[in-house]
Amino acid sequence: MKRISILSLALAALLSSGAFASGGTYNYGYDAPKPKPVDTRYEYGKTIYQGRAKNVGKVNFCVNNGEAVEPLKASTLRPFKRGSVRNLTSSLYNCDTSQKVSETINSKDLSYVVYYLNKRFRLRLNNG
Image 1 (cartoon, rainbow, N blue to C red):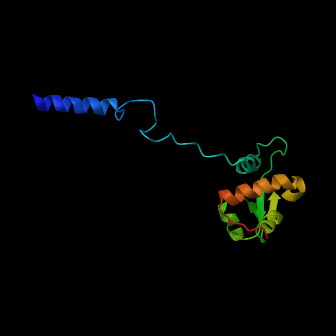
Image 2 (cartoon, rainbow, N blue to C red; image 1 turned 120 degrees about the horizontal axis):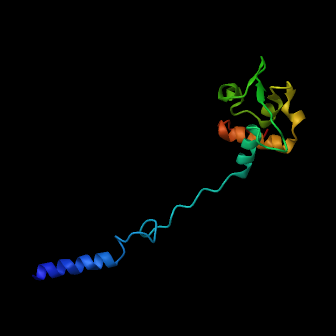
Image 3 (spheres, one colour; image 1 turned 90 degrees about the horizontal axis):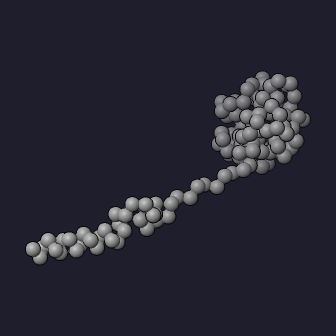
């Protein structure tokens, strides 16, 4: 009889401590996970690259590898890995007009696109 009453007291103490309580906190003793901060430079560069920026318009990006102007993708950006930002920006072309991108959009928007490409394709560009 004593054994049952001791077990029932221990169970009541455990339940009242909140260890098995539902709701209230995310995980007992810990806060809910916080969302990661949004990288606004990355997101704006992405919108320009995808042609969704209204002030820039639709630009189909191509890259000049020395031999030919090819559509921009991971394999065509491989020669620029660990290169300079200046080298990449001078090699970006608009596929539709065969004109340099630096002549069609302003330098600030171009820097957002290069930031996006650097982060998206892990180019590890230096500022030289």
